[in-house]
Length: 432
Image 1 (cartoon, rainbow, N blue to C red):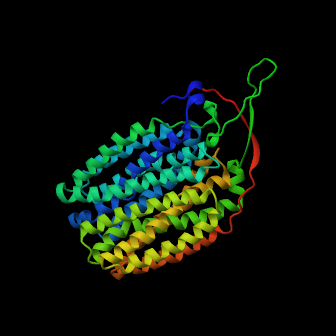
Image 2: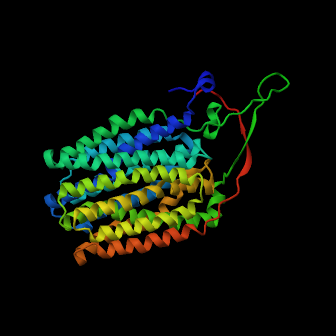
Image 3: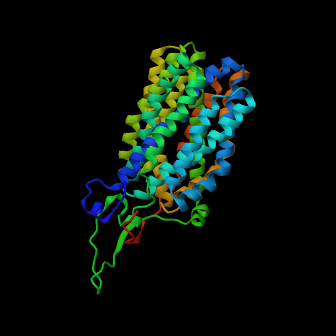
């Protein structure tokens, strides 16, 4: 879809929402990895006999690789645009899943999932989608982030049951091939609607309208004023907010990975049938969808810091229920409580970064955070696997999750939101 002067005058839908829809579709299909991969763990354990710590190490390698490449990917997104990066990542991730179907050793598993797939998802999904939304929205940033998070939620609700069915009927190798083909077939067309910034096409963030004053020669001499925060990378790194945010993001990332990676196999250990356990993961993500919508709406109205603390309580209650869930009613109680609370927090965390640092260097700052967060992301999944291997259950890992989540939510309360400054936005070219 091209953006022209005529389109700008006549369009009833701000083009930024088309960008968000494309990013949402990409994020939804990416749920094959984010939420669906845990469905592959039981058949891998059964076929190869690996320990939980060994199989979890791949996730840690993935986070290690993501931390190393994060600053480069973030800088590239801000410089050359999210569309190029998303297309590149989709191709790498799609081919990676097809290659994953040929895994025949622990080393090849680490190489393909921990390195190759990680590159694809870090480049095309983790950074690009939220970054492009942050550049198109300021006042409605939480709602834009919410729309992308809903895409992830819909994909996360759909993909685990589909993959579980494919694995049971056709084997995990064929399910991996299906995942790779689906990533490219669905994701690549969606990536084509992405554009870098609204100003490049004569538009304003959030779809706001303005009158163009005329100069002496009768031509537009547009100087549009809007209030926003835009810190340089140096200013962000020197601020206390950056390091406080790191604490909250680190703990949220580590604890989330523990639950999502080990949920399915934990439930089967507790006596829940495999199909029901895989379906519960999809339902949990499905229950998060209303939360993602509510979180986007609440985040544009109320203080995001207070909301994160409030819904952290729901997440903690949900994880405790998961730790003792040995019946389907308890499983679905966890699904509802944890899923909704977790969903609310997703758009709040991503849009909060934009409120603190602005949109110009959003992806670069996100990328710089990656290597700082990396060591903790490496430890989390392996720690949970080690806990199971040593103690025979995930109880201690889940209790550690609850403690960490509370600390992370409290840390957000010490953030200080900068006061937006009035900036001038020049009228740029209207051609894509």
